[in-house]
Length: 338
Image 1: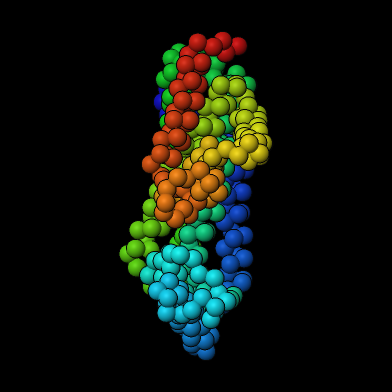
Image 2: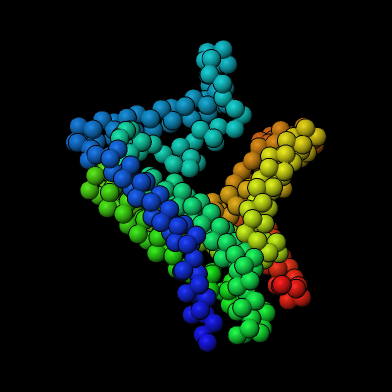
């Protein structure tokens, strides 16, 4: 008996998995159809007007930066202008901005693949994370609850081998589906941008950045799948994973966050799983905490911002998922399955 092939057949035959695949395709189709219906090819007049507005916005940024530098150097008396300028003018420097105004920013109703591919990819990753968590939980939870695992152990009486094959088959299937869905998804919106929107000419930096987000998203999908699988194995039911996820969101992400704000805890976002997920996907996220400046003893300016980077966040995600997975295997090895 080929255990991997048997698990693939069991996984593909589950109605819940089939339903989730249909919902994935439906969400994709609705998003693509909505984007196509709300976009059009810009005319030369629209492009010319958009380029002019982008150039004017850039000139305004440069003028503001120069005015801030002049105020800082004492060239403009403080009473001559009512605008507020910070002590550090670098935040107005166009060179230091994350992005500069471009023509696509001033083309309403025109889909730009270069501008909107990243948000669309985030949407797909979020759906795939939910897909992986639910499929992982239902796949093992239903077998444990219905006795399917016991029947399988009659053929292959090695618990860890059976559970490991289940997890490996699940992760491989979800990964293959996620990669295929991502490629079709991005290719479709690329075609929409070229035929019914603003095509543009994305450079190597764009594709590297998009590829990095995609790779991190796939890792997150696999972690969510393993997490749902582990919690359902520990609870012996699909509802255990769903209940744990709901309880965490309500008790910790909402309740504990409120309590931390009441007690004026420093850097509360470091304790939230959502913050580490955002840091992993984006490479780095910044949070603001006014208590950092009030407790600072330095003489330099204090911005009140602190950062979470992808490295420590990945360690946190791996530790949680790995710990629960190891616990699930340890419990499954000794637990009475009847």
